[in-house]
Image (tube, rainbow, N blue to C red; front, side, top):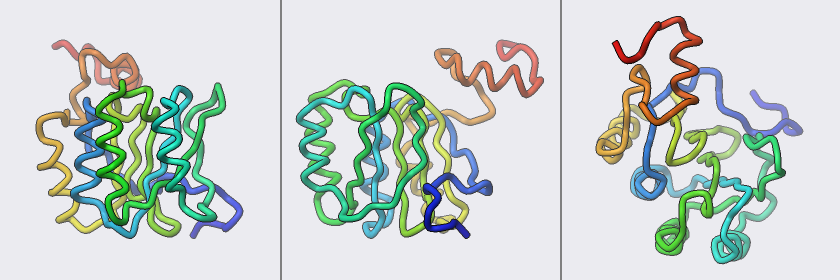
Length: 175
């Protein structure tokens, strides 16, 4: 159980869904699959002013602190309830901007539980909570099928993933 004064963070029992290569598809999947009583946390260092204004106007009241995933510069954090059309409206605005102008990392949480974590959202791995029902895991896989890479296979464009592959002692990923 998380102490009230500690930031929300990914549970150690979370599992890696895979690498997602498209932020817009990830936002669509979250909109379609994640519980509507959850909250989307986004952080970024170069969020477009229009996106920041939208997120600030719909910010959750008294949101919990979420563990920051950007060391420097200090990111702008926002908490967007998934209720209603909030995420659909964010997605419509996001379509006009490059991925870094939307967010760097994102988290979907409900209460004190992180349900989904996307590091380098749209160009990195996604972790899912085991507290989500298996049907939700399957729906996310299905919805993200065109942009989801198996976590055991390094993406050729991902130096982060390549480093993790080599650090795990798996040898040359090209063989």
